[in-house]
Amino acid sequence: MMLTTRNHSAIAAAAVLLALLSLAAPRPADAGQALNAAYGDVANFRHPELEAMSGTGAALFRGGFSAVLNPAMLGEAAGWRLDAAGSLAQDHEDRFQPLWDSFGSYITDTAIASNRSHDFDTGFALSGRALPRLGVGAALTTRYDFGYEFREEIRDPSTTANPYDQILEERSVVGGGSLRDLSAAAAWEPGPGVSLGATVHYVFGTRTLDFDRRDVQVPADSYLVSESHDADGLNATLGVRACAGDRFVLGAAWDTPLKIEGDWTTTTTLGAAAPAVAVEGVSVRYPGRLRAGFAYYPRSEPRTVFAADVVYTEWKDLEDSRDAAAGAALENTMDVQLGVQHTFYNGMPLRFGFRHLDSYADGEAGTASFSAGVGFPYAAGMFSVSAELGKQSSRQAHWYDYPDGYDVAPTSRVEDNRFRVGAGLTYAF
Image (tube, rainbow, N blue to C red; front, side):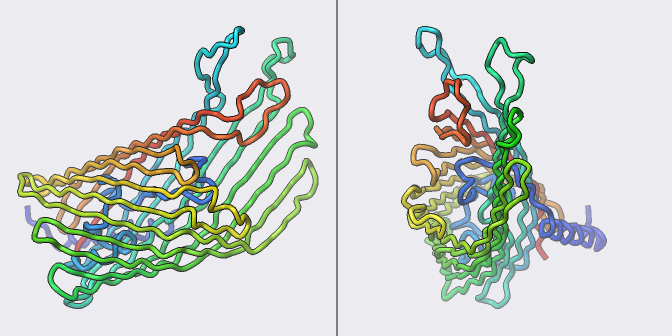
């Protein structure tokens, strides 16, 4: 079927509209993992084309998103390309305590808190060929996400209480906000199969964290502490790309340390008293990180590409003006990403990925995730969808102390599960 000019115009209008929505869409802040509440989650959504292949991009051209992953890959830009996408994630956090019998023998683990929360994210990118040997790109993505939600009720364990099982306390920890990354990049090709790239990032946003304790029996002991940090900062990414023949591509990129600064506002309300507000200047210097990877294009039918990235982050170099020992308490991390894409004869790509990401807050915890996705070509564009399932297990201290009379271990076994779906559009013009 022949496509008319009206068809192409409709696709272009849809792409522009989706891009504008990705720029303006609000970010609900109530999802994520407790281990990432302090300095943010790094495993954020960009586009289903990437996420279905576990986020690989050190040696694959990803349109304008290469400005974030490896700007040198913009050397492969042949024409102008627009990408826009959105995702919806559901996070489950379940906390367990050991259950003992009357003889002190372990029976099983029992859940003491279970929370379900959701998060919406967006990604936008533009890339193109400005000059014969110069590729350019821009992107707006999430750098660090602070979304998290924990809620629990403390009930009277006495079997003689009247009313039975009455609520004694309601407690919650709710984190929100994100640091968004507005990036502009360029790549220069000094020779065939080789390119050098650089990106300038402007990172901005506001993170929030609320501690809310409601004491039903003694309302005067209730409190609400709300914290917010409105900050911004600049950093850069330097990248290199080299093609070893027609079927093997190597890529590497270095993100310089990112220092964000801004006002940290703490609002404290004790009981029914008027809130007290304190404001101080706070800076956080995030560590640099190194991304390296390769892409392999075998002689196969259907057409296939294998990709692998490794991201190393020196979290022990983090500096927080509020806590001089913050970095010493963190762990350096490895993020291993594997992806494969098969493209069938009708041009439809099928994608799979696996990712293992260490936790910077706990050296014994890590997230393993599996992803898959498919693309649907149409005219000069492609509509892509992806699905991702991740799991993490750890032991964590309690957010709040438990009342006297509760036999509670000092830590809980915490099971985190994330299911995320994404949809996006790629349009060439």
